[in-house]
Length: 245
Image 1 (cartoon, rainbow, N blue to C red):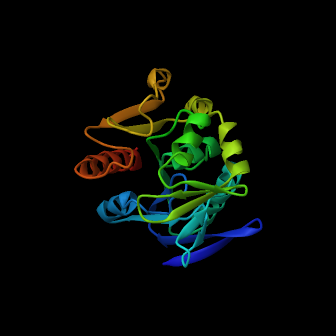
Image 2: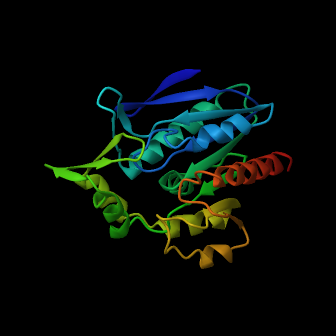
Image 3: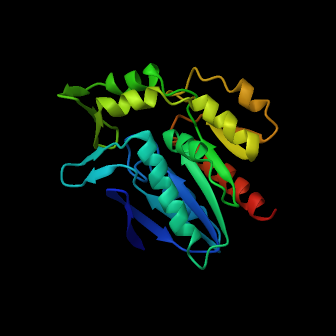
């Protein structure tokens, strides 16, 4: 089913199926709610009694095949609105969150008080200049006025205003992840061949007793190809074990 939720001056388009155990998926920077097929593969493997919510953070222009990214604080507002809507549905007993990349950091920063698991896939430890340059230096990226036009591997184009990228630089990503660990347990799943986070050092987070960490072998940042099955198995194992506690 589909629904549009009002959020501030805008709205969030969601796709969902209600069930007692709900998984809310939080996507990464400048992509659509399931541009890489990662979340739909997890959804397809969910057992009976499990539902999901997929939604877009960004402003989608289907005709132009673009997505205009919103700021980090706006992402927090949109995720909070989606979680609030799910919480109000009568059929729902527990809410779990699976976030990827910046979507993982968004979930960590919001620090929601839902009863289910929080699973963070390839969460960045920094959104500093390296992160901005990673995207703006891609082949084909161009700067028009105050907006970057960034081609993506799925054929879409991400539009990012200079102020949005500047806001991301100010986010203390590792600090947000450490802060979340102080008041609730969560799981991090890493890719061992992550081309985006190749220099990230998770040593400090590993030592925190509330953080569980797994690594999927031969996996890139999107857990594509043969690594996808390992990702799905690890996510489902974590979700189902949490639902039984």
